[in-house]
Length: 310
Image 1 (cartoon, rainbow, N blue to C red):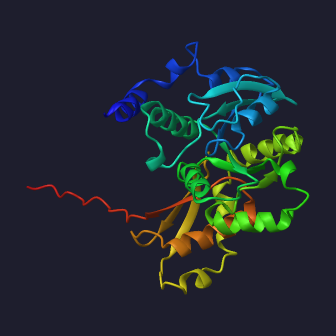
Image 2: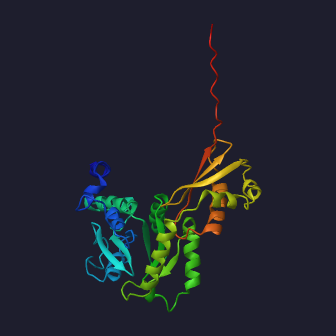
Image 3: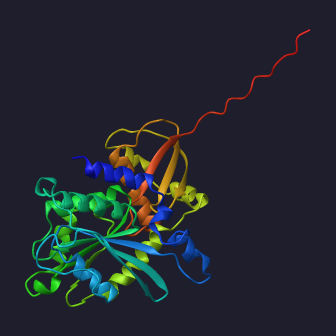
């Protein structure tokens, strides 16, 4: 009892540098090269037996991951580095995430904890769905883990070769959008890991999503953007009236924007959603969540002048 919590505490205490063989992190070593792009960490996530290990082997051209029809074969994460067209990727095959009630063995519980830890250390998450099963509630839960942790997401419908003769791709994608509304920014790709179908398009999408994740917008551009937004439409549903002085991007990976306003209040969900949609319409940010935070502008208090006595 308590081993999973102990493992989480240990991982938080261990420095990230210790995870690499050398004393310099992978990203730092990659940046030292003049023409070498930074490494993109890609976590392959999904529930058991959706083809994550087969996908890793197909993407890397190796047989690192054990492939078996028995669900739950992968217990520990398997990673492989791939260099393709000048880009460097680290693919991480995580253990299948089950429902809490279905996870009984301690090894399974630890593997789920490690899967979520590897997800939080990744840049992009490949959410693998089973085309035969369709979208399930567990798929939505796993996708929620990636969304809440700020990972970029690409939705992969695997085993498409088994249903493509009877299923309509447009109808299938509409079903995915309906069940995974919070991932409406994530591209949807139909692949076959077993036959290697559409994997070239997957690498192109990975390059796009990783670049969008690191995109930065200047404060001047954001202020010009604010002048074009009709905030009256955003305030109507819930009567949240705030005055925005200016907006700036505080960081990337994921893109985080700070609103400087006249009120110290939490932005209403629909207000933040409206603003997020407007940002995507103007600047893109394909495949990555957008975080928006409100910060009230404080009044500058002038120091009082001290009078000399006597």
